[in-house]
Length: 290
Image (cartoon, rainbow, N blue to C red):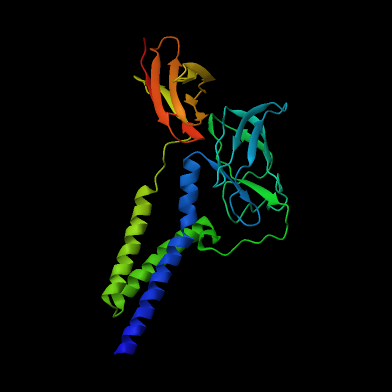
């Protein structure tokens, strides 16, 4: 009797581990989707896949003029916004090199999708750059530590694993004579996967869009001024793109947006108490004609 109970416990542990492996191996597609739609890219070690903090990313014009600068956070994340145009990316970090020579130019990286393959980048409209950036470590013999978070599977393979794995797990609980705890483990797994599906939706785009309140058509050439609310000081001015887009990157503080366009009423939007550095300040706005 005791042996049978111990055997059931071992089966339950293996079943739980099986479901955890499915969840972990299919996680990167979900994370990549959320990251890209949230408007930030990641600077990462091309050999290990680990994020690289405090890397300085500069966006330069073809003439060498610095357009924008950002510093990656502890998770390697950075945010840079820029208008439509052709640019070159420069990345500086001690003991790291960019552009990556280790990165496969055709296959890309096994750690991240949407990787910037060269210094050159073409931005099609105003918004945040979501390209992930691979940098080579000075130590060429670095190897990635094993982790379920870093298991490299293609997107289609991950979808197949999630579908077939869940089907196999359901078959086990339906067709086999198993204990009550198998159902509990499967229910927890199913709940976690359902939460993932429910949240698998696009967050706010990495830009704000200004439209006409009557026609809902994008409004180009709207002058958008970013003000320091506390000192009533102008920080930056932008003009919306042909698709009515704009975006600002701000650090913590109190801010105000002033939107002006001939023939339309002025719009003032307050953003009090921003607590996050590198915050993407962008909001969809409907402007009324004067």
